[in-house]
Image (cartoon, rainbow, N blue to C red; front, side):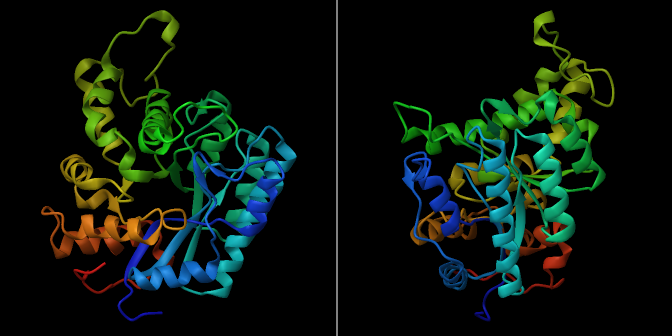
Length: 341
């Protein structure tokens, strides 16, 4: 490991060969319009060294594991979670891991979470924003979120697209639809009352939270508005009854208590994040694994050159905030961030 490595990358994806082979049997060769990259743990380690990353917290990304077959989804989740556990064992200190759960199969997700967190010692879980059109506020997911709350679990929310769906504008999906999927997932969690009802869960939002930093005030303000009867009892589980005043205040408080990663947010997005939550709630992420090295370098350079973040704020974002969430990834006193990608 390079001595200059100090960053902890919270958003780093695995693409195991057995996973790629399993999806190939279904005719799936990538995610949306991007083919599966040629990825191995050994290549990942070289990439980490080139980008000053000491530890990458790995996760499986879209297209996930669900293609209508619960048994297949359970097997594939187990395969990927055990693959990550071997990565941690083979390269101590270089990898953390977020377990993948086979939603919308709640029974399977609960069983896999127990195995992954208790036996494999994963650091948290990753949930895709939606599966088969069902977002994370879905009532059938209540038991899963109650268990995540009981465990005070860390949940990384990543957008999703089903590659089996026919879309006219595939190229637009990761560029436009993915941030929207993340936003919808957060709104669904907020308006279902699930974010307020289970405060022990610590959430991290991929890609800077989608459009939440821009639309957070508008989204929170909606909690205090009257709704048509057919819209459901949204916001009913907030701490106090919604009104235009307390709905906005409570909603903003909840949204600003989430964590947001820095994976490819861009200059305007970083400015919005700085204003919305500040450095205290930002965590370093690159979308490594899927993204080419040049894009990773662009992401890092955008963060390092952002006018609003000095050395102390960069240290928070690149290391300290992640250690607050994952103390086991120490050391407790990382060096100051360097101005290099």
